[in-house]
Image (cartoon, rainbow, N blue to C red):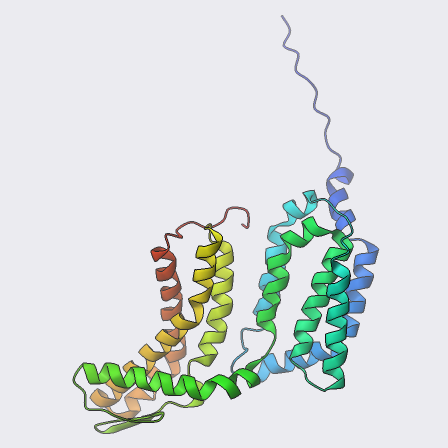
Amino acid sequence: MNDVRPQIPEQSPQAEDEPRERFFTPLTAVVALLLVICFAPYLAWMWEIWMRSDYYGHGPLIPLIAAYLVYARRKDLAQAARGFSFWGIPLVLLGLALYALTVYRNVNFPQGFAMILVLGGLVLLLWGRDVGKLLLFPVTYLVFMVPVDRLLVTKLSLPLQTHAAAIAATVVSFVGMPVHLQGTTIVIPDYTFEVAQACSGLKSSIAMTALAALFAYLVAAPLWKRIVLFLSGPPVALAANAVRITLTLILGRAFGQAAAEGFFHTLSGLLVFVLGLAGLFGVARLLRCDRMRDDIW
């Protein structure tokens, strides 16, 4: 008896490329070009800030990460239903209105949020709600590339400096070290440490918040656990910064100013990042978020 198996027609390369062709159309290229031209002055300003700001050195990484997240969902995007969503119209209009207002008032950083609103609206207009849901996080994640350091430094730097100094002084006092705290200045025997603006923890908090958002998106967990993990980013960064200041005081007391503000001070930024990353993993462990999503990789 002959074994007859049904013949499965082979899919042509043209059929395999069809979803990609429908996704990246000439209209998409024209819209992308117009978007870049419209926001070119802001993009140039943002790049300049990235290159010289101590707070947004991570800025260029954000669009690269967002682009990878889009690439990682390419199969889902190819299978998603295309359409036209009227919800994109108010987003585009709101973004353009905000952009026009901020250009008129000569305020730079809100233009980044306007650009992201326009981008999100265009996704809905060009491809519909299903694609919009898949691209919601990558588009929203772009907010972490918008430099708002001047606003944050003005509002938060001094309170964070005072808070960090108070925590470090309390810790070294608890271990038996004589300490005198006056504002942001910590005085111990043979060493005086000023918690400067760069030591406020703001820089690490900005970067750690972006990292916590990405981490929360990648873990396989209920929504409430992801929110808790995301919100833990700034406290973890501030705690790591307080540890850095405490270790600086201990080194200054034991070995003098040269040891505290020399090689250790140069590497202390890396120490804060490592401690912050370990803190995020610790929070994830407490929440039992011990598995990563398998639809991203």
